[in-house]
Length: 123
Ligand code: FES
Image 1 (cartoon, rainbow, N blue to C red):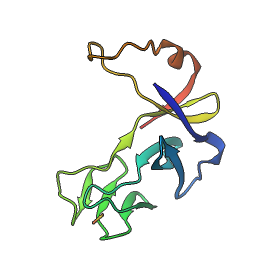
Image 2: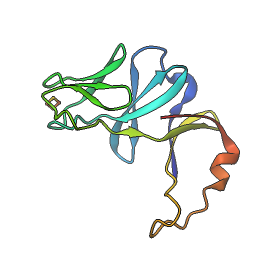
Image 3: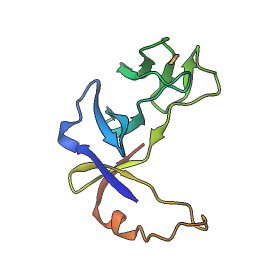
Image 4: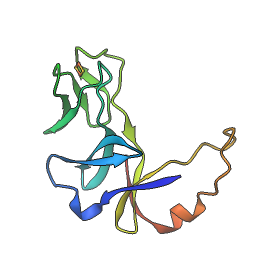
């Protein structure tokens, strides 16, 4: 399954830009020159996140998350994670690409066409 989020050339060098994934808010940001997408939902109580330097900070109660989603400061639980989404640049678009692990029940889409058009990956 794949779903384009935003043109790759619209991802800012610093900060993040909002995108939509099936009606859910997503932040797309740049990490070491590659796009990364994170669900814009704090695992504490669902507050919106903001990219600040090398972390995401919740706007509601200031929990902090590393760029890989790990919680690095509460009040979110230490073992919680922000949701980092699998993305690749496909045809110039930062694209959510989900490939179910082999053997997953219900996974019957052939994703080989995605790899053929992929320009790079993030996440
Ligand atoms: S909702 Fe994010 S820290 Fe509370």
